[in-house]
Length: 377
Ligand code: ADP
Image (cartoon, rainbow, N blue to C red; front, side, top):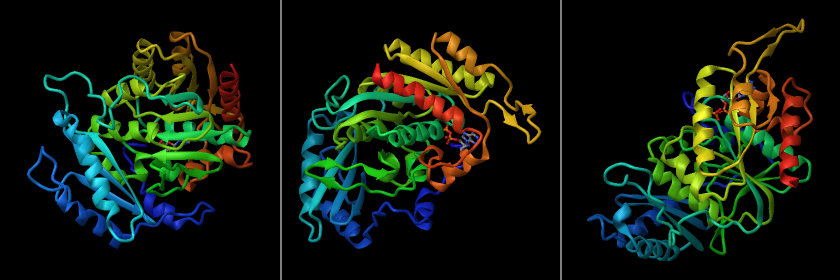
């Protein structure tokens, strides 16, 4: 599902009318900005950034450059970053330039991901002073509806008047561009990346910075370099909650996110199936080892209700309850298979952002209730 059918967020975003202003790419300026990088050759390469190792995107008069950086680059990476920003800023028509560094090699001898190489690359959680709670949504397995649930929780909270951010850190299929019908790149203002906004939710996604398909071939550490900057260098403002849609799995990217994001807690999403349960359990165990509280479990695709009221359980039974018991956390919602929920995702308008009565609505609202209790606590 999420992973096996990557969505063409860009074309969908263009096709749909939306009140949110689409940020159009300026091809000419992008080419000019990329050409300007011919004068910046990093010490770790014999080729300038214009020839390799940099992705450039331009929105209006603001440019974003993503630079692949080897781990051993050390402090030289920061010099390259500043030189790239200066070179691109000098292009006529570009007022602001932002360069983001991403680490792209695994540490010798295996082990976990290096921390990102951003400015100063502080270790430990990134401070987000204006954000009251940071809640991760994790599933372990892809395709269980983690992003759909996360987007609806964010939209549901926003509809209730909460100030909400949504960080899509799912490297294998950044879905926020589709789920919120938004297109990047984001603006940069006073050195800060400006989240896009839809349905009252401030949204940032790796999918706004690069083509979603390209993210598929990024290694975890590369993505986490960018995700760390989306977290720490973004203008999130004052938020009651920042919802983070985490990457599937328990790999480097997941671990780094758990270490760098100042997580207040995590909601686990699973289907009733053993396979999904086992992956969500692994994910939960890893997060618990890192002292992240497990706030609750959402069981998705739990049943299908026929017109005559009969229930079919295509994915079996019990995964959600077992997961909740395992972590001594509440099972906060059991969502049915719901075509309306699926369609709302494809349409780029989360179900809870509107009034539509749908089979999954009540359960989703209960999940938002539970999250609100946590935000207040
Ligand atoms: P993940 O983030 O876990 O990979 P997604 O949120 O991308 O999963 O969901 C995978 C697919 O399943 C999407 O097409 C989504 O619309 C659909 N989906 C998610 N939850 C439900 C549900 N309860 N009923 C019907 N379709 C769903």
